[in-house]
Length: 388
Image 1 (cartoon, rainbow, N blue to C red):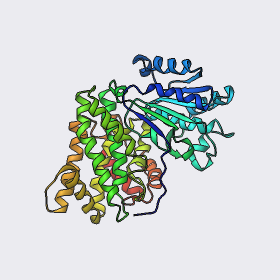
Image 2 (cartoon, rainbow, N blue to C red):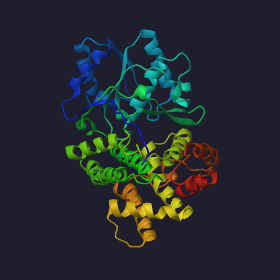
Image 3 (cartoon, one colour):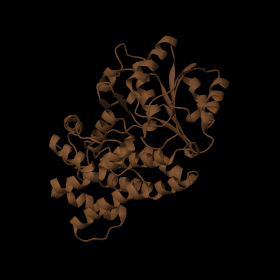
Image 4 (cartoon, one colour):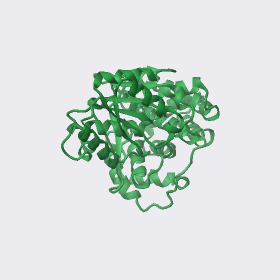
C-alpha cells in the first residue's frame, strides 16, 4: 500500500429534513450565488424551499441557472462574472454533479484574474476560491464530497477534469428523498457513473491494498443490489439512500488513497462527451465491458484481478480464472444493458460514424497514463470500435 494523506473536510448532513442546515451559509457572508441546471428544482418545489431558507436567514441570492448536463465553460464564465460584479461571498450548487462541478470552478474563477478555462487546464492555478456548498439531487458523480470538477468547451471538442482541495464543499446536504423524482435514464446513468468510479479505483496495480479492494467490492455490490430497486421503485428510501452514500464514497478518496492508479475509462468517455455531448453515465456503461474484454486480451496477467472481481462481487464459482473473468464481464454487461436498461453501444446514443475516433484516442491516451493496463492510441481506437 502507498503512503497517503487523507482529508475530507466536507460536512455532510445526510437524511430527511436536512435542508434547514442551509442556514449555516450565513457563516460565510451575506451574498450567495445559487447555481442550478434546468427547471427540475422548480418543478419539484425544491427551489422555493431553498430560497425561503436563504432569505429567512437574510442572505441575498443571485442566480446562475441553466447549467448544462456536461457543464460548459460559458456557464462558468458567466457565474464568475456575477461573483465579481456583485462581490458574492459564496456559491451554493443545487442539483447533480454538473451543477456542483460548475459551482466549484465558478468559486475558483471568482478569485482568478485570467480566463476560467486556465483553471480547467491546470488545477494548480487555483490559489483561492469562494466557499462552496451543495444540495445533492442526483446520486452519481460524488462531486458533493470531493475536490474535482469536469468542464467542457464544446467549441474545441474538449472536456477536462480539474481539481483542488480549495473547492471541496464546505458542507453538503444529502437528502435521498430529493432523488425520488430522478428519471429512470438518469438513475441508471448515475448508478453506472458511481460503479465506474469504483472500477477505476478497484483495478489498481498497487499490491497490498487489500482493504481498499474490499471496500470497492462493497460499493459495487451496493450499486448492483439497489440500482434496479431505485429504477423500479423510485421512492424506495432504502435504495435511494444507499445509492446516494455509495456515490459519495466511490470518489471521496476512501477507495483510492494508498492504491492510486491512473483512470482509463473516464478519459475515453470524456472524449465521447466532448465530441457528441452524450450522457456521461451511458458512455461509461457502454465502454466498461468493452474495456474489460480488451484488457484480458492485451495482458493475460490481469485476468486474475477481473476473475477476483467476478467471484467476490458476482459470486461466480468457476475455478478457471479465464472463465471466471469472462463470466464477470458478461455479468457486468448484462447488468448495465438488460437490468438497468441502458444503451448497449455507441450507435444507440447517436454516434453513427467513426470519423473522430483517432482524434479522441490521441487525447484519451494522454489522460489514461499509469492506468491498470496502459493504453495506446490504437488500443483506444480498438475499444471504441468494439463498443460501436
